Amino acid sequence: MPYLNVAPFYFDLEALRPYEIIMGSPLELGEMARRDEIDMGPLSLLDTLSLPEMEPIDDLAVACEGPVGSVLLFSDRPFADLGAARITATTESVTSIRLLEVLLRRAGINGFHLQRSGEAADALLLIGDSALAEVRRGVWSFVTDLCEEWTRLEHLPFVFARWVVRIGTPRIDLIARTLQESLDKGLSDLPAVLKAFPSPVSSDEARAYLNGFLYRPGSRGDQAIARFQTLLGEYGNQRAPR
Image (cartoon, rainbow, N blue to C red; front, side, top):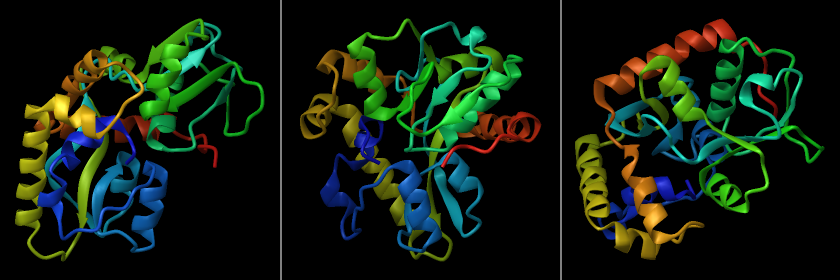
């Protein structure tokens, strides 16, 4: 994924060889996994739940508890007043759209319209580095951090992506160890990570941003995923825009 929040996993690229590394948005990577074009990766949570041929690599993930800073809803009115709002949603991930839908419906907000066109909108959902850059523009009256809202309601982290591998891939134990070692090296030298993977924010902001992630959310991550699945069944009836 071309986002700063996964950069620590890829810090030691030499250790990750001989794997071929393919760049793509969460949506693109999920589609490639369905076409058997990739064998492992940090896939968007909803993709990991719908790909029975893939299995988690330990508990390696991209998760956050509290503000995440890069899954943001920008709007011209408060979150509670978004009934009947036209919301332009990111084209990069379905998980963030489903999270937004669950949070809106859980708050009793209905009648909103999700769109992926360039039409005029009352709100804009962005993820990753695009969200970080949009904050710096400062043109929206309200910014809602979806992970912060989720944590406030559920008292759990939110898991945005999980590392998964195709079942039957040899030496999964070696893959897990290699990823963990690369992650450990990256997190221990964030200045070097930021030098190798430029971001749209300052170095201090980028370090604080990366330090806010949970890359091994453990059993609480499992609880969060189960809770999200339950809420999807209750509130996630509207189709995400394509």
